[in-house]
Length: 127
Image (tube, one colour):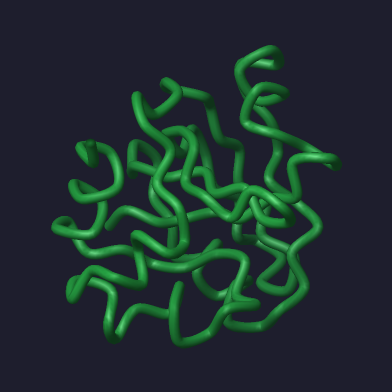
């Protein structure tokens, strides 16, 4: 299952992830977001979404490893894949029927949200 990970670009941007090549995705406190992290599997696709002033999906990544031995603080390591050819704004997401029931739209503060395969394709193939 693909997931969307939100980050404040002034704290850690997709460019930072590209520079670092991989990172431990931490700092997640919301119980629903923690649950989503815990359920991730190595090899799953990710979309990185910038919050703040940008409010747009900007790049893709992949899950390298998941250590869920501490269920309250799962340790998920991710790696950058590539920047999106065209960032997808929150307004574009909200305008798509694909996201009508998505936690991305319905639970705006959720920092780790599952995506359907169709939602993932919309974000990475959007022009």
